[in-house]
Image (cartoon, rainbow, N blue to C red; front, side):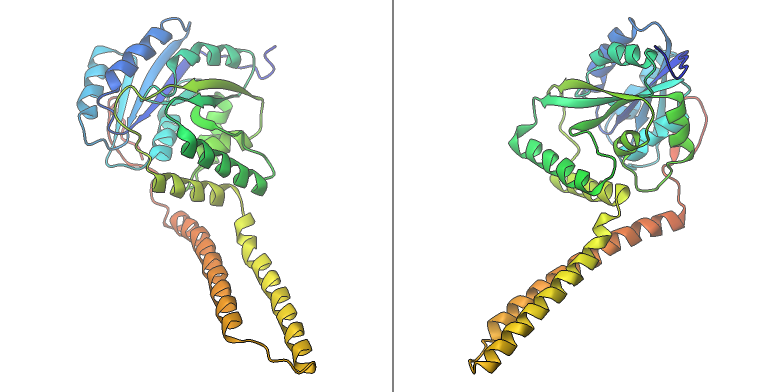
Length: 319
């Protein structure tokens, strides 16, 4: 039963891409074959996140061939989160599906997602059951990230959630107008925003071409940004570190006094080196965490645009 009165007239497919010239033609062909069986008007909104290959030319050719295709080209690379946000901001549909152009987000899932939206769900959250190119290291780090993050949040994130999801018009409205932080974790936002949602599992196949644009250090940076965006718990590390250090100093003081009364010397050099090294480590860690949050505040205070559109096939320049 449709409980939220969703009346979808137009579906927007937002496709974020960066240097995907090899996979774009195959992705487009696969996507079009799936959209042919979806009984709705649709638009395909490609967000070119500052690609330096021939993605620009390929997209403009698709625009000329298909009136349902729209291409937005950024002035430079702003990152995947900004590309998704731009698609949500600029789309014209009553519902949006966000996905990547490497075919690891299978277009074959779109009919199932649309069917669930018609049942009254505001959010269809796609969760990877398996990935052909995952490997032990990637699976382990993903599990560690969600395990650590969920310990810091009141609202838990679905493990293995992806940037492949479908949202209704009112979620689009909220992301356009309320969730406007410069540092974002959109897949986290849509899981914590509430409303009626459902999880749909999928298997991520290998990339048809090219390689992942996320290096280990980029994933690590994204993880830090996600945790600091969604939780203030890391800021409490300084308080707990201070309490633990204080208790440790009391224990050391009591031990030293006992040794003084029983007339036994207390070895000082090794103990001092270990304590000072440990305390400095904690101190710099806490300063680094505080610096990360201050950096977010600095970005917000500057108020610079989330992205800059260099060219829009609809001739609407926005930022």
